[in-house]
Length: 309
Image (cartoon, rainbow, N blue to C red):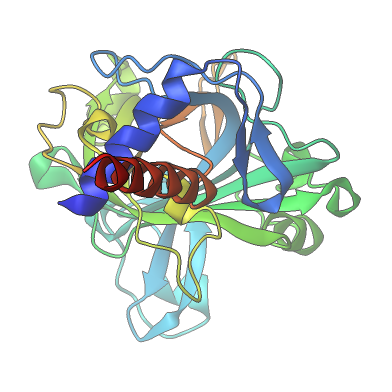
């Protein structure tokens, strides 16, 4: 309860001085924090993001092996042809898991993240297709954001040489994507998926085009977690309104819209999604420094009260 109270006070303190930048690990800063609007799911940090998505299947005989596949391969492609085995079994929609990669937009506008000569890259996945419930199984899901200097030069457009046939990801670009320091990390905690009104969705179980809104659970910073995890405020403001009906937890919010439909003359299904747009939102403070200053102030007030007695 004390942590929750202190976090809330720190958040109020941060918002009362809008001009005060939020200083975050890894040289990341929010020069102009936004005023949170939890009724619309917006925190004091808001960033658009550029990303792509794809589906993978795992070898049922060897969980360490996976392959990128297209929706048009479901129920027609065998595991044997993907993994070089004798298996004649085909995979279904519920054998697919969704993965994605991208980068956050940096700037100096309201709520924008900035880090000078660096970039913030994004990796997410492990979202198992759940056709019975019209969405995704979140067990095994992950969201990772990395901070690295521009020398890594991650190029999202070069991650896949061909978006139509699902060629393997470029090894250099994948290394650049995850080559920096792990900045934020978590797991999908709640997710709502809405399929677009697209004729292809009838054939492809609603997966050809759609949008999702998700909350991401962030654990405290420890070895192997993001260096800025502790900077995400643990407060009811991060419940993002009544949409998820959460009480209080460390959270980020993502909204993603994507399509695997080519949109050209043939309207073919692409293995790698196109027409993508997304947003990232969170409530963050310059903790633990902010909390330390706040704690010092509370101690000073306590001493003043004692001296007056």
